[in-house]
Image (cartoon, rainbow, N blue to C red; front, side, top):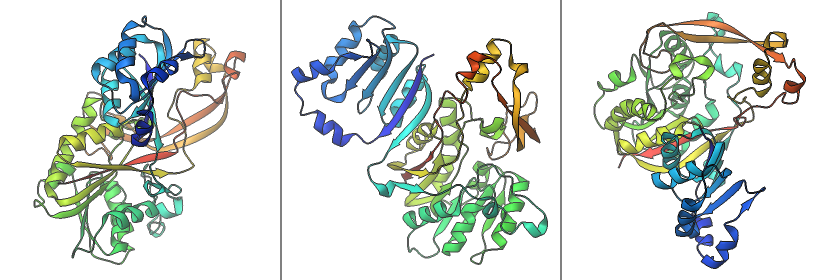
Length: 409
């Protein structure tokens, strides 16, 4: 299977500049570099490189860089043919093309965000432990929700997508521990929060009770079923943080399947969100860098209208990638010799019950699972070969998360 890096970018200005180049000048640019390992494709001479792709022998290139508006299935198939096993396609295009490439055999490794303006980027640290547990100390409860968003970014999104409409109403189908509800109450808006897990519902209630403002409407259950009970055209904004489909820390609630299965999962809740949303209202949803293109395609499928992706940028995080040093020691049969240098206690890691096809937790699709704390060991390389790759992985360090924005016509 070929690897891949999708680069999300608005390339209109670059394409306009490239279109001024003559076909003759571009002939010089359609060359390989690094000893014949990389091919660079540009939008300005599409007809030329489409022809050339058909002439290259199979498994010729280690990587292909495609700075194009989009690629169709035939073009992706030709690129897949000329790439060596494990080769990379760096795609400077939109998310729909990334989804097509993924369906045809590429593995999406990560997305690099290139913003059109600073207005599309918001930087703030992840939620602190103090912020997560504000109002819970007296009850002796700890907020162990794994994906709590900071209030600053939620307040920023409300400032951008709210209006002065009377009784402005915000719906959150994936409430979690209630951070969005806190931000909404502070702004003086009405809030509807839906949560599947009783544990997080109780935490959300306690956190929301500490904030003055309109009493929220909180419902527990599968968000799809709960939204069916809401009137059509009754909310002004849908602000939410659905599962990313990354199988985060082995949690079943974040397992949405792969490829088109993820789109189908999102379409279920988006159809109801679209129905209850007023005309002109926005769906603002956080997404993972390796999966938000599926969320975007689902939003398009239900009839929402695209707006530019925003980015939440932060400085913490770790790569969800393959540990190369550990893999080498495993292949040499020396994994047991690796010395433990530190440990990490992962709280609430889920284990799907045998024979269960459902998901539990933030995923909003019911199923039988148990939750338990897990100790993770960080180890040092045992072999000389593994020491050469200590600290190396197969993915980029996460430094941002996508915020997908679509509006109801």
